Structure formats: C-alpha cells, structure tokens
Length: 212
Image (cartoon, rainbow, N blue to C red; front, side, top):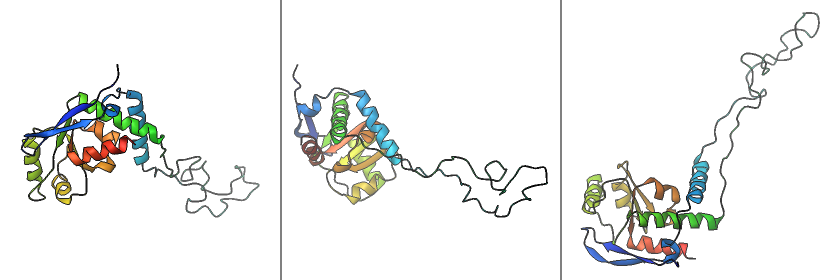
C-alpha cells in the first residue's frame, strides 16, 4: 500500500484550531526503523563523549632519573628507573590516552532516521504544531503557562524556526523542556522527549530540508 501524506492540525497559543499543515508521505509513511534509530542515537552519544581519560606513560611520571643501584653485584634485578611500570609509583603500561570517539553515519541514513522519528511521533499523537510562540517576558512561569494552555505537561521538545532569546531563556530552568532551532533537530532529542512542539514555520523548514 502506497504511503499517504497526513494533515496535522495547527493550534493558536490558546489551543484553538487555526488550520492544518501537511506532513508529506515521504515522512509520514516511514516505518519505525528501530535499528537505524538506535545506530543514529549511538553515533550522537559517541560524538558527545569527552574522551579525556588518561594515564601517565614512563616518560611523563615525575622522578626516576637516577639509577637506583649499580648494575652488578647487588643480587637484585637490573633497574634503570624507579618509575618503571613494574614498580609501585611507576607508569602505566598501555593505559588510556585522550582520544575522540566521534564517527559519522552517511547523510542519507541520518535524514532517514529523522523522518522515521517524526513519523513515530505523529503516530503516537505526540506531534503538536502551534502557529507561533509569543511570550510577554523571558520568565519560566510564562513558558509553563503557555505549555499548560496547550495541555503539554510532560517532557516537551520545543522546535522554533529562528533564534528567540525570550523563548529560550523562559525554558532554560525547566528540566523537562528543551528548546532547539529547526536546523538543530535531531533523533536523540526527538526520542528523549515525550512530546514535540513545532512552530508552523519550523515544521515547514524541517520538511523542506528532509525532502531535498
């Protein structure tokens, strides 16, 4: 059966229906693709790893410049430094060194994963579209009031179409709310938050980018 587009209602900030927006079949018809979503999330988390674990090699441990005893005649093993990895206080053999864990999946795979995550949200009725987000002041309580009017009380990912310092500051102190711009939309955030709130313009931008 050929996939079909889906029409999603667009609400005003007071949760009044003000129109619809079409989610094209190329997005709405995506199957779940659990393994691809897993691979993309794994890639994102790997790219965020600091990779700063480090141990000192023999050349980095302070001291040990003097030969502890003469080469012959003591009955002990030949030793050139007290900082040998075999000694207490010495270096570490093959210990971890700072490294990057980052890698990238193909661009087509990453885009397909975003499509699949959006389709999953739409099928779960977890995709909400508002015509615009307008707050009187950058206060946490204003964002709470706005989300309450839209009946969004769980964890929410808010996707805006352009930089908006008022909205971003108002959500900053809410532990279960995150604001991202449309160009920063990613699979990890889509799956992490229960609900996704788009401005109408932001969803249009995402659709245009994914259909290229």
